[in-house]
Length: 131
Image (cartoon, rainbow, N blue to C red):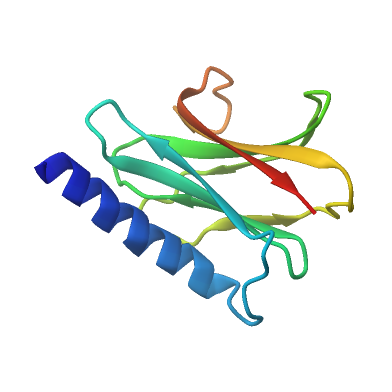
């Protein structure tokens, strides 16, 4: 029970912090979050899509020596964008923009990695998005 409470609190705090960075406009229906959570239920990172402006934010939620990598895929599984964030809880989110087109399906993925050159992700979370 404590783990679920910790996860809920961590998710809420991290999502709020990441969202505050891009909160200049009200949330749209297509806004979405993807989460990287470890086997003990702790939040490791969050990837946020803000529909207004098609901005993506990738936040590293733990100062644990690991970073997170966010990915954006098209419906065929092709990587459209990827960005690394190893800033830990004290650092800013990494951001990128991508024009998410109406009628097309995309997938966000966020995983933990051991540095910006590590392409063996773990603890991945996914979220489908559609404009």
